[in-house]
Amino acid sequence: MNQQEKIVTMFDNIAKSYDIANRVLSFGIDKGWRKEACEKTYKIYNHKTIDLILDVACGTGDMCEQWDKRAKENDIKISKIYGADPSSGMLEVAKQKALNAKFLQAEAKDLPIKDKTVDILSISYGLRNVVERDKGLKEFYRVLKPGGILVILEFTKLQKETILSKLRDFYMKKILPIIGGILSKNHEAYNYLPNSIDGFLTKEKLIKELQDTGFSVEEATGYSMNISTLFIAKKPSS
Ligand SMILES: C[S@@+](CC[C@H](N)C(=O)[O-])C[C@H]1O[C@@H](n2cnc3c(N)ncnc32)[C@H](O)[C@@H]1O
Image 1 (cartoon, rainbow, N blue to C red):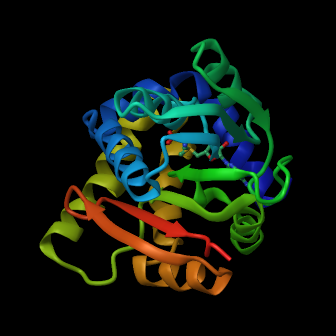
Image 2: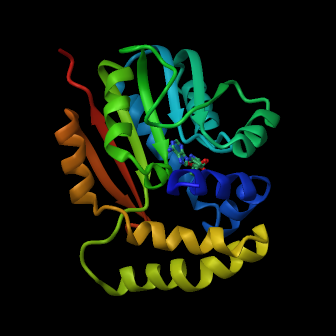
Image 3: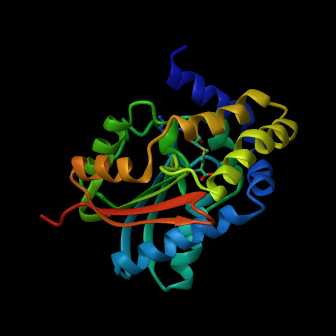
């Protein structure tokens, strides 16, 4: 099994306990991070009708649900919301929720979506798991319409050590693996999370990768003591 297959199998194995573990481990704050991402994006995109929103690495469908809810609140009409994920286990949980979304089994680097058809493409806490990230980012660029928006929520590596970053690391490395391991009965998966953050990019490096792919970065903001970072990037209009 290669590294990417191992990651997807790990998500298959924790799929059933994923939602409850997420809520407990983030004290429910993760919902607020997703809500803020959707609301800011709708303001920046500023269209009252949207053809397609695609959530990549959709997991159990939380982001698809937020796109739908926030659109209704803001009187935005969306024709289609798609969620894509390579983990059949995660998609199975998503499908049971009867959300206003269609789910596809696919990897970030190989999306079964036509060129220039997506208005908004999101990936929340998923980019770290995309082993061939360069191919993924190019694929996002390919499917987005000119002027379309890429939204990334991610736990980035912190550039400077501060008291707060040490606190975050202590929680992520010492507390989270124990609680996550108990809730999911899969200790390996919840040891993977802090390691995958350590192995990921800083905010500045991800901005550079997005710019190198052709995006203009409109926003890169840290939330909750920089635990979570929201990136909003635009594909140029022409
Ligand atoms: C931490 S979960 C995030 C799920 C969801 N987006 C959320 O916010 O809760 C990461 C997801 O990335 C998916 N994933 C792993 N490798 C991927 C890849 N190469 N392309 C797309 N998704 C991938 C996993 O199957 C998993 O569902």
